[in-house]
Length: 236
Length: 236
Image 1 (cartoon, chains in turn green, purple):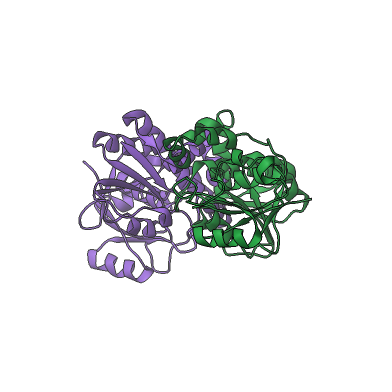
Image 2: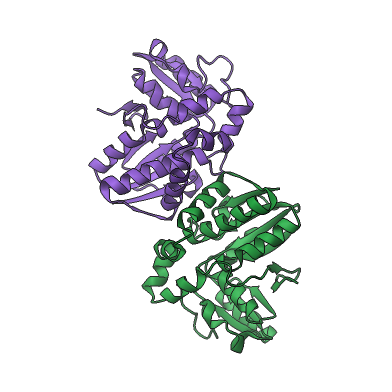
C-alpha cells in the first residue's frame, strides 16, 4: 500500500481507477458533510455555483447550504457551520452543499476507484475503511483558493499516520510533510486551525466556534463515500 | 516581515518587485551552486536545455555541468554532484549548469525584488541576509517534476524557522508545514533525504554520497544571489 498527498487540487495526479481518493476540507466543507450525515441526513450532494445548488435543492426538495466568503448566500437555508447541521434540521433530509474550495477538490477527485470525504472528525474511521481494502490512496487537500491550507494538511497527516500504522503504507514526500505537521500540532489542533489561512478568515467573521467544532479528532466515527449518482452518503 | 513557501514552482504567487525569493533545490542544483561558489567559481549561470547550456559554456569558456536522469549529459565536463565542484576545478572559472528541476524554479523566481539560491549548506547564512533587509520573503521549492520534494521542503522549513527567530517572520500555512517537517527530521536529515523522491532516485544510481554532502546544514556559510545578468554569484 502506498499513500500520497496532494497538498492542493492542482498537485493531484491524473485520475486512476486503481486508486482510492479522500477529499479533505477541514474548514469546513468536509467537516460539515460528516456532521450532516452523522445527524441523519440521507445524503450530501456537492454542487458548483450558488445558482446550480439552489436549482438542485429545489428539484430534490433538499436543504440548501453553503457559503461564499464564509457566509451563507442569500436565500440559503443554512451556512457552512457544522453545528447548523443538527438532527432537528437534517434527519431524513437530503442536503445540497455549495462551497468555495471543497467543490473543486471533489471535481479533481472524479475518475478514481472510490471517493471518500474526510475531516479531522472522522479521520481514524476513514483510515480503517481504507486499510481494510488496500489500494493506492490519494489524500486530496482542498486548500484555499489554490494555496496550501494547513487545516487540510493536518488532517491528511492524521490519516497518513494511521495508514502507516494500520497498513504499513509507505508515505510519499507530501505525505511525510503532512505527517510532520499533524505530529507537531496534534496536542493543539485548535491552535493550528486558528493560525491557518482558513481559520484566520473564520475568526475575522466571528466563527471561532466552527474552528473548535472542526478540530475534534475522531468525534464522529463514520465513513463517507461518494455514490455513483455523485452524492456523499454514510457507508454501511 | 512575512515568509511564504511555494512547495512547488506551480504554487508560486505572481512575481512581486517588493518580495525577495529564495530558490531551493537541495538534491542537488542549489547545493551544487553553493559548493561551486564556495570553491571559488566566479559565477554559476543556470541554463535551460542541454544544448543551450553547452553553447553558452562554449561562448563563455565556462565549465559545463548538469544532469538528466541524475547523470551528466554526453560531452559535459561535470555532473551535478557537489563534490565534483572543488577548488581545483572551479577556482576562478564560470560554471554553466543545466538540471532537470532547478532551472524551472529559477524561471519562476524572475521578476521578484531579489533572487537568492539556498540549500541546507547555506541556510542560516541566507536567513541572516534576508533578515538584514526585511521584505516579504518567498521560499521557492523546486520540487521534482512538478511534485513536492521533501528535501526542498526541509530546507525551506530550516530557513523559515530561522526567519521566525531572527526577524519575527509570521509563517504562512505552507511555511508552517515546512517548519514542522524540518523540526521532525532535524536530527536525521540524511534519513529524510534518503527517503525523499529525489534521494531514492540518487540511491538508485549509486550517488548516496551526494545525499550526505547535501545534508550538511550550514557547512558553507555563504549567500548566493542572482545578478542582473542572470548569474548566481557569492554576495559580498
